[in-house]
Length: 240
Ligand code: UDP
Image (cartoon, rainbow, N blue to C red):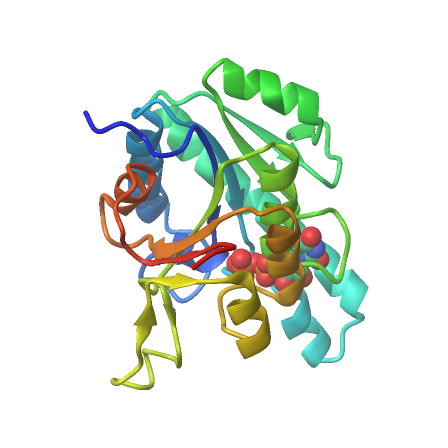
């Protein structure tokens, strides 16, 4: 079996990938497929932290655009991420992967609060730790939550699984001549405003020298390819 290039990673999935082919919500069959991918990566000997967005259910910005109070809408978005985390926990445990969900918004009947040392212990025991509710505050995104948890858990890389196979100079879904980058620096991303993650999240990765690997999660086997060091997608790091 190929050896992993990293020891501990944080995998960030946008909520939208949990929709499968649906327009909204959670497709349990597709979540089951994603869980198998996570298991395959973990079986290479890797420690895995997970962060899942909430965009398949609710985004604070969308609520605010329709007249809602932004902070109130953001709290709804954070709750959406907890639902996604529980769906992924269920799918992983059904295939024998032990997991714990830790939420930045405390809800003791459902999951643990975020406690770094406890998360560390879960990883040592071979459990996947799913961090929910982002940073636990409005006006942030789950990309910032992912960067924060990856830094505090001392992950070797943040893997961002999306429906596009990397970072492009323009939207490949609209421009057939869009060019995909294989490597970028944090400053390239920030200065060119490339659509990989928001500036808060990208800055946090830059400050903590945390490499970001952007790849297509819908292609089976890709998580394992990335963790085994294959050059797919786009890597963002200090030196290019
Ligand atoms: N959110 C928040 N604070 C956080 C993380 C998330 O307020 O730390 C809210 C915000 O409204 C966001 C929603 O939760 O729109 C869902 O997260 P996100 O948009 O990052 O999900 P994704 O785009 O990854 O599916």
